[in-house]
Length: 630
Image (cartoon, rainbow, N blue to C red; front, side, top):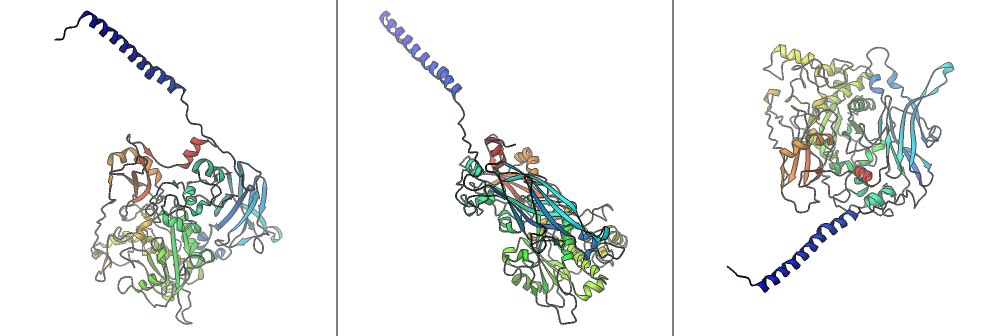
């Protein structure tokens, strides 16, 4: 034990007192002065450049890209009466009104400005409007006017069929109203009662990249004098302008080779490639290329091609279910596509086999462009036959439809021009159904015939019930014997002898391997071996997080844009990551189409922080945080 003297005690006491004062002063500095510093600290000032068009005269361009009348399918399926309406397409024109100023194409486009066709695809036209400098918003109305013939003394009258009301914001370059970004029928697209309309709006822009000055200055922080449609700062293969338009971060690498938020089998890199032909990454689409076949002399009377009327029937049936179909038949709209695009004629073959020989492979290799495989389905209008078969691995993206005398007239009892075209449409819709997942190995009603030759073990009663209760174009009974049925079943007759086909369609079927092989030795559908070895998502360095998926399940389901059914989602988290700003979560979704074979698709990427908060890129949220515009 240490013993202290009196003088030492005084010195020690003084030292302790001085130390105490020093500690108190430090305590005061940390807690008092520090608190003072914290209270006076202010958030950084964000400088907003609210100019709209400092480098160029302000203007608005209205593009009318396509107008399609929706009535042809109903005219083709009429069962009684003369049925001549399908031969008389409507006459129509369009009017644009911007801030009270009206532009009318009647008399100003082509010979008359009036379109007299069911679908004016390939006849794009536009109007330009001067806008007052620094004006922020414009009110716009697009009208489709139909000329109604007849009336008193046969004088035609103009009838307004569609009116699309929009509000355009020159700061963001987006419009809202009857059409808006990520709405139910696609941006720049309006599905009306009578007409379907594709259009585009854009403003004057100094660097011609389509990104408004306000967005470049305040949100993206890019140079408004440099064309960003040619720049790809994140090196993900997609330029800034496209990523901005469709709400992807231009400065963070996105997996566009695999991203497919609408789960149509057309990944973002392919959507970008198809942007000129209306491709939209948030709208399910089916692209089809169709070629014809050479005729076999003067006795081969029927042209081997997909008639315009049949095309319109297919387009309309899918449009009613929120799926857009685009068909390249070699028309003007597709002229700047691949050299061997649609509308070619393959060599004549009397008959083609879907199992042995597969002569269609030569068509697939030499008439169907490689860059389209995985995007398009390929239909050849041949002389005889009707099937969907694989030409590469086991993916069913090749279709043959017979249009010759035997298949079109005799087998389908098509003795009039209308019936002939309807018959071709029916077979085409049937074969498309196979390429969308409706196949015999998943449901016995598909391809069922009137005699027990495909399911030998099925009883006569079962066969008859499938034959008459499965009210679908996938049932041969209704291809050949029902004049007006042109649809997949709605399941109204009830299971098990009927099913609702529409929720079972899986759009990417054309690019995934089927679960069964059709062998030359197979005599019936019961001989097919069905093996589903799908292992689920495999992505090295990432793991499925069940708990996180449960937390964000509903939010993730909202991201997937599937029109015919709901989805199952899974969230994968990166096993190791150093940079906290890196994307560390991938969200996958699979449509619930069982028993149709389906797989998971990547729908978005994001970031999870240490507290499991999910962050997804949103340019709208960035704008609202920066400067609320509404």
